[in-house]
Amino acid sequence: MRVDTGFQVQDFGKFLVTSVLHQLDGLGHYHNTFQSVSADSEKLPVRHVHKPSPDMQLATLVDNDDPQKQGRIKVQFKSQCTSNDPTEWLRIVSPSAGNDDQGQNNRGFMAIPEINDQVLVGFEQGNIARPVIMGSVYHSNNGDSQQQVGNHLKSIGTRSGHIIGFDDSPGIQGITIADRKGNVILINTFDNSMEITSLGNMTLNAKNLKIRVEENMDVLVGQNKKEIVKGDMEQQSQNLKHDVIDSSTQTTGKKFQHLSGETTIATTQGKMILDGTGTVVIQSKDRIDYGE
Image 1 (cartoon, rainbow, N blue to C red):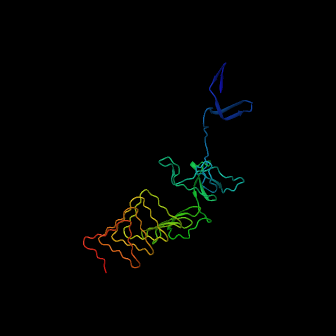
Image 2: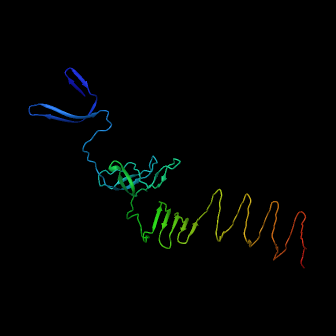
Image 3: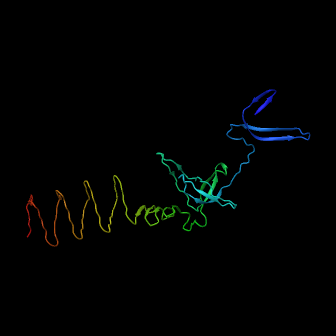
């Protein structure tokens, strides 16, 4: 912008004209006024802005495969208009979200809705250009509370049918973790018991393992049982009883020693054979009774 003052031209810099008012009277006299801002302004000042206040909207999820893997989704609003295209990738509100102490992703509650789920959309700071997913909504085609009695059931379920269930009903109270095939971990709060059911194999891996049973312990094996101890093995009990229906074999690589206050070895059927490649020694501090 320049202003001519006599023969001198004064430069005030560069400006961006934001409005011009033209005036022309009946005598043909013309003049104008204008408003402007500096050309290097990052934002234009706008007066008397009527900011919309959008309500939350229902929408249907149409895509949850975020190409940038940020857990975002695309939705389609239920607007009745000629062009109702899906949105851009929208973020999802979560009870907790962020990084862990090691800087790894997905700390908090990670649960992306499924395609065709109905979701509720809000808008950051009331800005219709910044939608955000507030959560999912049950409706007549996917909600079922027939099993509820006094609102006693709470659950987390996946698309495949895996579930974590919480039961607060009197006489049953407990927690159930189950998959769709019937593998179950059941915590029964009512009778202070816990049950683990596996339809296939079960493996426990640990550096050290301790099992403490205050009262009784029963172990039932349907077929075969094998124990391998690479180091030493020690058993201690008040009384020990072995019942073998068919045959029993005990093999010791080097030395076998049996110590007891009193020992009885008897065969009810057949012979008893003591066989050694070296000398067989029978010693007694009193006497040896061979019987009749």
